[in-house]
Length: 246
Image (cartoon, rainbow, N blue to C red; front, side, top):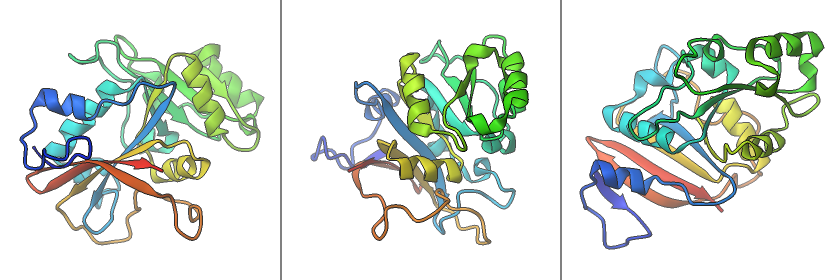
């Protein structure tokens, strides 16, 4: 990889990036809580391939950044539908992250996706974030599967995402990586809880009516959410960058 933009080091454009450099470039700042999203998009704005999965448009460069982002995270926050669609399971240890991040699924219904259930041996924790609208019967089932302490009920009719993130921070899960899907990212942006967006732009065009990386109502009309560039890397046509919310 090579650096295209790094405002922290304006003389660095064109510099080659080693594996150790990549870890440092994506290190989150030390603060009470840091929420970073990570998404991938094709040149024509699709967040998925023809099979409806983001994995089908990933590139090797994107995978490298994806792994580094996970190694920096205390928790990976994902919508329950994405857990099912993308085949998520609880996270495994890595060389850089011997204590794997917790997999946290967000769902209004309170249903526990299979990826939180198994496998569990040697894997990170599995948590469910839901709301009171799920109902006591379904909440009881979730608690019987995951344990009382791993079912967070925040909000009445919908999940209160800021309150849920506060609860994760209280558990020491301060560095949160939000991996989608587009609806959850839209909700997080609307709630003002996203500090930074990681995006990989892959050199591919897929057409069709696939989703974009953000779904839901317009954000902060009329201008949306303003961001500033923090990092941009390139390798084999894939652009990997960080943008911070203003």
